[in-house]
View 1 (spheres, helix red, strand yellow):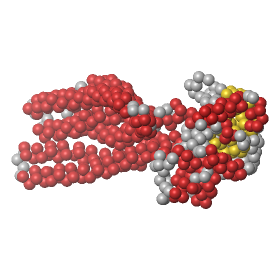
View 2 (cartoon, rainbow, N blue to C red):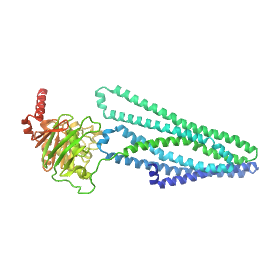
View 3 (cartoon, rainbow, N blue to C red):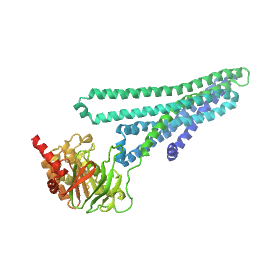
View 4 (tube, rainbow, N blue to C red):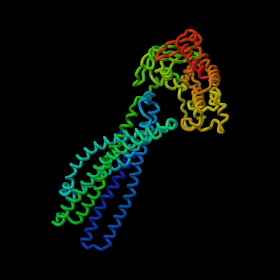
Length: 574
């Protein structure tokens, strides 16, 4: 992945490296200029020559600062572009993943990878890569220049480095393991925070503030403990680097002093040699930090890669007509399905057919498979076995664009974005069509509420639509589903927050609008489906009864029994 991005942004990378080469060439010129100044003073030259040398050193240092800035602009700019591209890829991929993937992950962990891990990747491609290249250049050129002065001193200065590399390699594995542990715990914290923000009212309603604070403190303390262990491992690498650098300096000072006194090298050569060795000091110490950055960035890339490697939802064939089917029919043949980790199948061998123009109800007890049936027809999940057809075409072979315009699903739990009501209802319209949005609002009986809002359709609904009532959120979500005019409309208990009169009015309007399509109403209130053409009754994932509601009431089966229980319960409540 690193090489792929370096190839993609090779222009910036190569320019940055060229500027680094120029920067270090200027840096390496300064010890030679110092040598000339020392030799001039040894020879008793006038102050003008020394002053000219000092002026040249000042000019070289100024030019070096300018060129170094240009190298940073290129290399750090590349890291920003890499982060931008990777962030865009990640979001694009997340939008294409199937709901089954989101069932297995936690939102906080995904957020941690998208934000904190992305920052680590940016550090890898920016400061990390820049300092790595700088170290290679300085060591490559510096060692050659040092060897030209005295190769014996150069070799002696390098004696500790094999031990250094072995120690750093071993410590690096420890840093990588502890980095993974810290980042995983950060995902736990992010997930806990996200859940508490989303469920703030629930926490207060059950007086769980203190318990949640304790749970957060435990996770936060564990994160601190893991980061302290990580800092200890990182500090070990930096300490090793510093110790080796200090040892090398001491050795050179001792041996170099002897060689100057014996006349084997000049004082100017000794000053230049120490200048080159001094230029190696920061890259030597920085290598510990660079290794940390690469370990952390590598772990972050792998964590992001785990998301990018997830298989996206099937999109069906890419060819064929993307238009709507005017009068489709829905057919399930021996469909079974089980959620990952489920104790039993959510649906078992379900076979049914809904003709064009029909209004059907799907009912049953809690956990009977009603919502699962809706999700399969909308191709949010693939069936485990059997097949689903719409208009005679297998669901998995339908192009995604046509499927989404053919099947509309109003979910059980309405979700609204933190935007205007107009943009929420028009989410599935491209371009936005205000007339169709207004008509959808009338169909969902949302228009009277909008008329009472000061900003009307431009009302900001807040995060998850919290400024609206439950019934308003459901009707807004229904209007959004109706707006694209799907041929198959599925209401997954999406009228449960409405009173009986409003629900009846909405269903009557929907029946007129869907006279050439299919209206599927999933409801826990059996009175809601009494006007349906046909009702399907599910129990434990199996279709146990089907027929017109009037016939089912008289048959004395599961539908009739549940209807009597509900009626008895409501009478008792009254």
